Image 1 (spheres, rainbow, N blue to C red):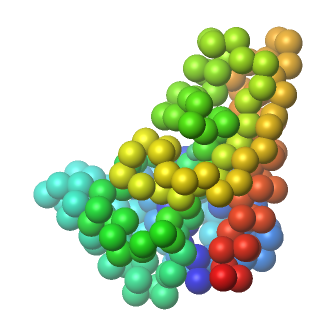
Image 2 (image 1 turned 60 degrees about the vertical axis):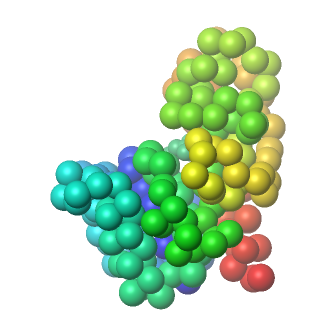
Amino acid sequence: MIGVLVSGEGTNLQALLDAGLPVVAVASNRFAAPALTRASCATAAFELTDFPDRAARDAAMADWLEQQGVRLVVLAGYMHLLTPAFLDRFPDAVVNVHPSLLPEFPGAHAVEEQLAAGVGESGATVHLVDEGVDSGAVLAQERVPVLAGDTAETLHERIKSVEHRLLPEVVRELCAR
Ligand code: GRF
């Protein structure tokens, strides 16, 4: 049973839903995340300002996911780092999707930074999540060309179309374990 964490648009969440994967819970750090409206399963928002600190927020989010029966957590555009208060509850069972060929270009501005660096090739990576910024073990990676005239939007869309295939593939394999 899968729990998905989102902060934004949720197109990767949509890809998981469209693939028929058993998503039972969707949580966000933002009440207003458009992604929350995509799922027909249980949803909840855990805003940092409603908790004394990040560890308390993460513990509450982990409690809620456990109550929904979640065994595997997928970060699909979730923009906060997770603390041990969360990660220790789902050992080796939290994965993320990132728009670069990690370990190159971690962080929240990976697409813009790749364009600024003039790379000829970008990619999509699915990796295990640890406390660092996009630093956990890589599970799957696929290259994506950077084309002349690309903007951050056009390149990100090309990467996302690969993410939408790669993430469900990896998640399906992890569910079968
Ligand atoms: C994706 O590019 C993902 O790699 C990154 O954030 C973006 C999320 O997009 N971590 P969406 O919310 O799934 O549309």
